[in-house]
Length: 206
Image (tube, rainbow, N blue to C red; front, side, top):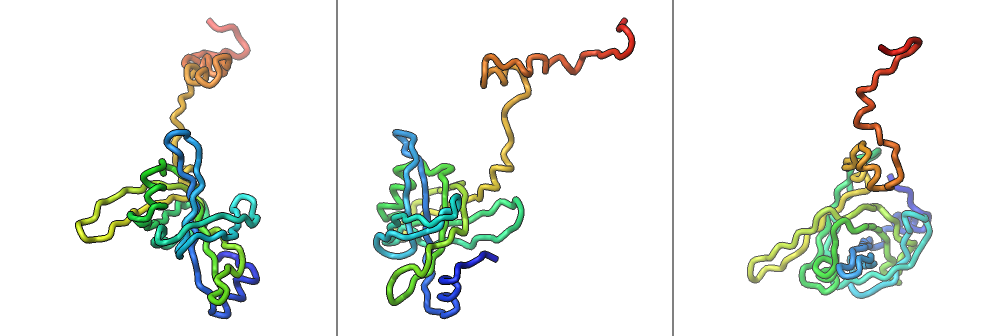
């Protein structure tokens, strides 16, 4: 169970709040290789929203665009330990923002944050900074072409950072591989032959 701040808890208990999801993406610019910040939320228009940074645990203000870019956020499994969590997003295939994120930029392994906030229906403002409930990276984002007359969408699969623990290290325990990192590092210079060495204790080898 996630801890809630007092303002959010009181608003939820009153039953007079509207939940909204906020998606923060950092795809890569194909020309420069630099990360680009993009925000979408599950409502209309552009909004400057306060969200909790999952790294610093401090409130930051970010700009999010709506108008249907973020169609829906799938359920987020609450698992303890190092279980890899998978979340599915649905983005619009026709809005400019989503199209730019998926087609214009390189979305592969882009860092992702998902926040959920609660809005007061009278003021249209968040009752407290939106809380982060998922961090990870884009695992897959296939684009399908819908049949004529039907509305298309983009399904984006996210994986939590625990996925990094499942990756294998391609580096070899060899002198050649070590010297790729540092030509002067000879730590593994005997790695290929040390297994055949015979060590004698207390007497001279014959």
